Every structure is written in C-alpha cells, then in structure tokens.
Length: 507
Image (cartoon, rainbow, N blue to C red; front, top):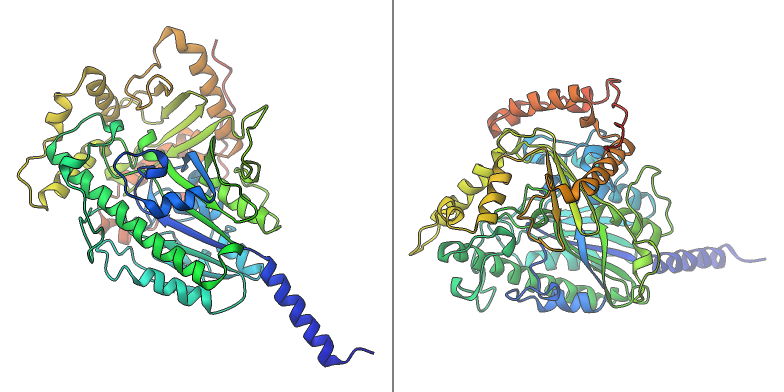
C-alpha cells in the first residue's frame, strides 16, 4: 500500500509537471504607434530588439485594432469583443465603462485556470474589478517617463517569485505624447528633424512637423530599449522557452489621420508573437485583429472560450507555409465612437475586403469635432518645445496636392460613405464612393457591414439609441462634467428596443 507521504509527493510532482507544461503569457503593449518599426520596413525606426523578436516568431503585417483609442482597444483584446459589444467605447478617464462588470476577461479566465496574473503600467478600463490581477505596479500612465528601469525590475520580481504559470501584461508609456526626445540617456543617439520625414498617410510635411515626428521615433527607439531589457529578464529567468510573448501597439500614432479615426493610420498596428517550438519564424499578410488574441491564448492553453467571441484563434498562421483556399479573414471590421466625449464624438463603422475599404459615418455631413481638436493638440505639442520653426498645419494642408486637400476636407466633414482602393491608394486620399465603376463593390461592402452589425448586436443600428447616445455624449464637454456624470448608455442600450432588420441589397 502506498504511504500517504509518497502519495502526497507524487501529487506535488504531478502538480508541478502540470504547471510547467502550461505556457506563460507575456503581453507587451506600447502606446500610440503604428507599424513604424524596422521589421515592418520603416526607414527611420531603430528597433533592433523588436526586430529580433519578429525574426523569432510570426510578424503579422496586416494587424489591426477594432477601435483606435486606448481604453477601447485595451478592453477589446482583454475581452475579445468589439467596443460596441463590451461598452468601453470612450476613455476610462471620462467615465466610460464596460456594460457588465461580470464580462469574461483574460485575467479573470486565466486566474480561474490557475494562473498568476500581473499588470505593470496602466489598465485604463472601467471597472478595474473586472480585471483581477494578483500583482499591480506602476498603475498610472507615466507619460512623464519616470523611473523607466522599474518596468523590467517589477517584471523580474513577478516572473521569478513562483513556478506557477503566469499571465503578465506590461504597458509602456511610449510612444504617447508628450514625445520626449531623451530620458535617462535613452535613446543614446536621438534622431533630429533633418533625419526623418512625416508618415506618408498624413500627406503633409515640413520642418516643424518633422521635429515632432523625430521625437516620436525617439520614443519608439526608447521603447525598443525597454523591451530589450524585459526580454533579457525573461531569458535570465529560464522561462523564455515556455512563454508566449505577444507584442502589440494599442493603436496608431496621435498624428493627423491617425489615432481616433477609422483610417489605416489609426487602426493598423504592429503585432508579433513568439512561442518557441510552436510558432515558426515567419511573416503573414493575412488580416488579423486584436480581438483574435483572446481565442488564441485560450486555445493555446486548452481552455474553453466564451461562446460569443467574434474573433478567430491565430494558430492556423503559426506555420511558415503558404495558405490555399479561403483567406484567414475575408472581412475586417472596425469602428469608432468617441475618445473624450463631446470633443471627439463621431460614430463610424468600417469594413475591408481585400483591396477595398468602406467607412460608414453614422452622423454624416456634420463636422467631425476631432479634426480641429487634433490640429489644436499638435500645435500645442510643438509650442511646448524649443524650435526655430513655426507649425502651421492649415497652411501645410492648403499647400498640399489637390488629392490631399480633398482628403482633409473629407476628414473634416465626412460624407455618409467613404470607399478606398488600398491597392492603388494606400493612404486613403481618394474617395471612390461616387465612382460609377465602384457601385457594386460599395453595395456589397455595405451589405456585409450591415450583416456584421446585426450579428454583433450593434446598438447604434437603432436610430433612437444613436440619438440618445449622441445627446448624452454631447452633454459632456469637459473632465469636470465627466467626473460627476454616471453614463446611462449601459442601461438604455438594453431596455428592450429592437435593432432594425437589414435592408434589401442595393441594385
């Protein structure tokens, strides 16, 4: 007969073996930048550590977020839902929140599965109680970049403190504004304005603008250094071979036609995954979204996923071989609501299939308030630094080519429908919505977009709910009002009002 001591020892060994066989998850998130990284072909980015990570895993060259805003994007990859499904479609600092405090989240599900959960850096989602982290450090945004070495030090503490499998989310402040040229000597050799050009999707350039962009790139270089320190901590721990490393940007740069838009400059991000022995080093141009991360992680851990997740597990893209037949994702969907309530409110939906992309504005032919707000913000960023140049964005736009000028007019007062051919117009300067040769493409994309909105229970399909939300959001014009306001949309969105049935296909 087996002794109780021997039996207990065997149970402990089996438990340790089970824990050791479960992969750890290291989720690295950066702020406010798109694929301006060396491994994505950017000519100015100095990112050797991120480039090395990409060479050791899969680099998703067409990766997107479902909404180009911080709280909204983070809530989506931690719930696997679109913002109109989870409710966090504005900034947490303005009181926006999940509809339901009991929404399944990655830290909640992994904690139940026996994982230690940790976060370093900001969460920026309401309520925080929906994300039960065992370990939390540097809980603020840290936009002033204080004590940046602490990120790796806290990560080392968390990673080394137990043999239990872990989920650790590390959220760096770069490349959010203010774009600080150098912090603690990082980067060692900062870029200057004469060494860069502005991102081409903006369509405008100039010495003063390049000063901002140069320091944006310096932020990315500093981010790369910090990620290198973090990956060294993981390697030294001896746990790297059993850790899924995921790196992503939360959305595109806070520049013109970037953050807070449905344009490529706002939605397209870097996304890299490394999992030794399970992911072959490769690159894929299949369309993927950060809503795919939750089903991917749960599948990797052999855990059941919630029934309503709209994303797809990325495992079919882990092998370095060409795919045949249907693409991984035929239609890519995204959306926008608001950022900081009234100053940015302009709800939109978008769909892409292959080379064509359609953006639907739910408040068409009204001025987009974020247009002027972004220009004002960029001017303010430039005024806070020493410069021999004047930044005059309206003048830069006025001096641009006719297609760029038209693109900014479209951005300022969007029509109901925008349609772009990203094969011939990768920066979305020419709206083809009224082109006779593209009417069938427009009709098909509109129909698919409507079906998606039906299938994902988009509350704003109901005109009365859109009207109620618009009234509520537009009543909150500053943070003083936001701190006093309790948002009511989680209540009236679900008062039993019906979403209308889809219209007949256009002829």
